[in-house]
Amino acid sequence: MDDTDFDTLHDRALGAYLGLAIGDALGATVEFMRPREIQAQYGLHRDIVGGGWLKLARGQVTDDTTMSLALGEALLAIGGARLAGVAHAGDDDMAGMTRVVADAYVRWLRGKPVDCGNTCRRGLQRYLADGSLSGEAHERDGGNGALMRNLPTVLALMHDDAALERMSLAQARITHHHPHSDAATVGLARLLVRVLTGASPSECAAWVADWVRDHPVFAFQPYPGHATAYVVDTVQTVLHHFVTHPDFETALIATVNMGEDADTTGALVGMLAGARCGARALPARWLDRLQRDVVQAVTGQTRALMAIARGR
Ligand code: MN
Ligand code: MN
Image 1 (cartoon, rainbow, N blue to C red):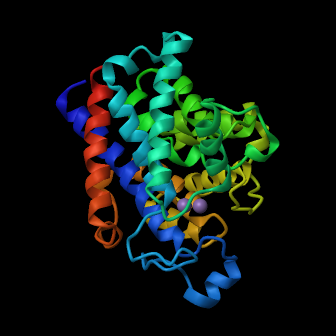
Image 2 (image 1 turned 30 degrees about the vertical axis):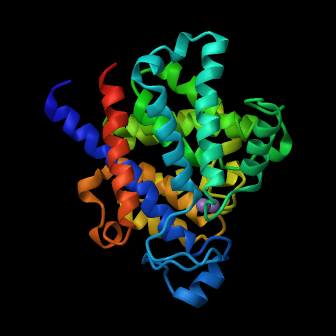
């Protein structure tokens, strides 16, 4: 890969991570609202203004972004040399790496995050109680909390599909152990790799169609119209809006005005659409409103995680 290619790839990666934060900050204002309530209160919700049920400051992000940053920190602490062995690591080595991630999530929780999903909290309490890195598969674990934070894994391991799958599942199952969560986390990771490496919109749409054929529970055409935190609803909403709207702003506004788990659907559409357009094309009116420390953390992590990817 020459330097020009790397610049493009880096711009897409930064677009994905900043897009995630923008979608989180924009969507959080209307999280848990119904479309009709959003319309009555905001008309069309299209500005980062804070507020919402979490009473956020303008430009503040929630767990979707801050858990991603916790995962990114853990992957950087593990380091590129050790991550290079993920696909073939023995069980003890893999458990050791997963423990670094679990400890980062615990530090995140102890830092009094603005919000924390029930399944995340329960999973981290289980880890603290017995040290186990995964619970038994459970019906109630079908939320989107593992999917929403997986972006750093993709940045570090985009060139090694087996490692990407293994680390995605390991980080996911610390808190969520459900076949739909697993499939969604790995599936969107692989889709993001394609967007980052320059797949065209039609190539992405074809890849998504194949993936849905293999995972029919996520079929989204015709779009069922539910935007809840159930990972099936979330993935249908994200894929529908990502595939339907060619530009970042239109895709994100359409997504968050669905309400429900709007910060998380917004974050994931922001991630995919931000990768597609690249950081340089993100709307300045949104980027300028994000809290500066978040922009700095995201920018620094993107650079460091891409250095790991580049070393492979
Ligand atoms: Mn959130
Ligand atoms: Mn949410």
